[in-house]
Structures are given as C-alpha cells and as structure tokens.
Length: 311
Image (cartoon, rainbow, N blue to C red; front, side, top):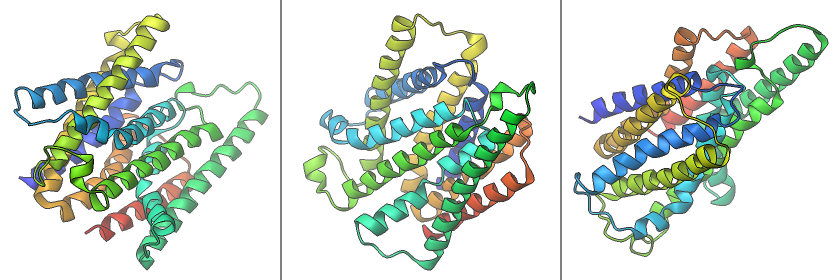
C-alpha cells in the first residue's frame, strides 16, 4: 500500500501546484490570502474529521508543541502562493522544492554534520541555478524597460522580486524541516508531546499542522471578507478550492507513504516538482528560454541527487 500512497502524494502535490497557479490572478493582491483560506478550510475539516469520526486520540497540548514547525511550513507556503502571481510554475516549483539543499547547509553549519560529496554537488547545482535564474530575471527586466510600448502578459510578468518569493519559500520551508528534525532527533518526546506513540507521531503532528492551517485560514477570511470587503466567487476561485483539496489529500497520503516505507517513499515524493514542471507545459502552455530550461535542469538534477542521498 505504501507505493500507492507514494504515487498518490506525487500526483496530488504536483496537481496542487498546477491548480494553485491556475487559481492565481496577478491583478488580485489578496490572492495568496484566498489560497490560505481555501487550504485552511479543507485541512481544518480533515483534521476535525480525524479527531472525531476518525477516532485519533489527539491531545490539544500537541497543537502548541508543534506550533513552531507548523508556522514555518505555513509561512513558506504563503510566500509560495505570493510568488505564483509573478512567475511561471515551471520556474517557481523547482526553486521551492530545493529546500533540501538549504537543510543540508543548515545541518552542515549549525550541527557540524559532515556533507557527502554528492550532497555538496547537489547544493552547488541548486544554489548556482537559483542565482542564474535571478540573474536572467534581472536581465529580462532591464531588456523589457528598453522596449517601450511592448505589452507583456501580466500573468507571467517577471522581475527580480518574482524570484524572491520562491527563495523565501525554500529558506523558511527548510527551517521547518530543520526544526522537525530537531524535535524528533534531539528533543525528548515526553517533553514536547503527550499521548503520542511511535506509530502515531506522524498522524498527530499532521493534525497539529492542519489545525494551525485552519486558524490561519480563519484569520485570512476575516481579513479578506471582513476588513477588505472582498468576495469569493466560483468563477474566480474554484481552482483555489481544487488546489486545497489536492494539497490536503497529498499531505494525508504522505504520512502513510512514509510510515510504510520511508527510505524509498521520501526521495520518490521529493521528485514531484518534476511533474509540476511537466503539467505547467501541458496545461499552462508555459514557454521559457533555452537558458532557463538549462538552469531548471540543473536545479532538478540537484533535487534528484538529494533524493538519492535519502535512500
């Protein structure tokens, strides 16, 4: 069953990337808050279902205990949603999913852990790729300024700022992953968690994450609907809801994929960004320059190398 859960996670998370992009309007400055609303609602419903009908023995202290990790993951996703207003999915997704390189650097610098040669190559490829993408964005922006009167597609308007958001995603997501490792590897479970066994730790932490997302979704709804007096419409926001469902299903199957065979499932799931790039070309008809394809290939190779190291 772990293999089916792994395939499902890959399809769900890459599909979430696709529908998040499809549901993002560059002209809507509240788009990322609406995405947080959608994901918070769906994850909240799923978490409550698990605690009630699902019969998971959940102690509410764990919500507070896991809050720092949940916050890092959710903040990173917010920046990811913000970035989709400005940049192609085929560029954004590989950058966002390069957080493994940042985690490796954090472990190397902060925990004094050794880095295998293959990991060093991966980190260099990813870091160089991100730098080159940012450089290309700057060059394109300067060129566009010289072409007076040329109209560009605002859905894919690019600038240096467009690269900043996915980079912020990868840094903050890496911090969340780093904290996750500290919690499980160095912290005493009885100090941070209550009512958790080795078999249920992933499920309980996932519920804590979903409940935190629900709170963020409620706050976002108050801001969008109450403060800004904006509206949610089926025409404009249906893809956000689909993306939220895909994200939640992927998060749920991810837990069972890891619990079934983590050593194989983890690196396989980490490659879902490749499918995100494929979907962006098939369904969004995204076209890039040859130099961008080359650099994205560099980043993808780095991500795959990091995945191999987890095997």
